[in-house]
Length: 189
Length: 207
Image 1: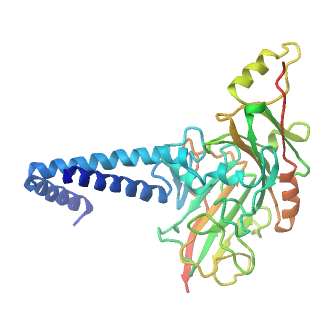
Image 2 (image 1 turned 30 degrees about the horizontal axis):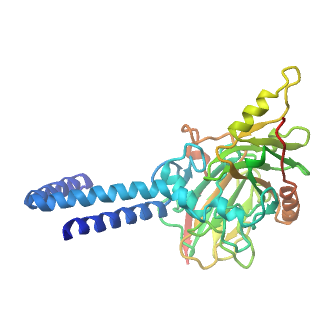
């Protein structure tokens, strides 16, 4: 009598735990990657997999639709290390083709991390560029000349690159590694 | 040890371990695994049905049906909608098609990126268009249920076809979202005004 009960309790517990653990990390499927950038390709689409739908219905996120653009999220730098709020990063030199793009800093839950400069995002329409059209955005806890995106005394963070009116799609392998910006860690403080 | 060798060794150890476990315990283990797998699947599949804090529920607190309301700005400190772009202003209107089709209009008051997307009660984005698809300086569409679409099509005049863009909503309830980019930080008020020009009106079906 006790044994079936124990099996039930342990089984249900394991099932709940595994579902929660998987969903906390954004679902296991439907993700394409370009260098350090990951794209939840099916987010919000009618044929999104059950994990993706469960993740969205818990977080309240309203994803960018395929017809509007693409959202790329990086939690790691180019060398595969977690993005750390105590380090200085350079994001350069080009972004994939798009009418507009923005690069922002968010915490693990997807919310911007406020800072004294109130600078949580850079738009393609406002950044300083070199003569050849390339750019470098410095993500750093200390002020930097040029395009400085502050991270203010946080532990780990994520970078979000959003492409609007982009000819790219994730259906094929259309996004080449060379097209996505590099995230280079320069030094840590 | 290479990862492959390590894996092989692990499998061997597991095999040896399993062979030592009495049949009854093995049976119990298999039962636990089965119950766990079933629970996992049922939970994942049911979460969207019972989620009380999904996007639609959060949007519903912003305004009544057909009312246009500004989404809290991404960097306002309000933690309702993750992964919103701080460079954008957004406005929503929630709809309920049980009283008839919904006409959604977004006049474009300024150049720059503007989009209009449609979201079902269950979080599916079923249609989206950007300012590039604008006609006569506006984005406009009629959101319908399958039954309403049949009525509209039955009344279509073949000589003089309707110019309306008809969008089929997978659920009776849902919401429309207008997003407008502020190309520079100082243009945020302009982007908010652009997003707020979203209008949602229930229309009567033809008799």
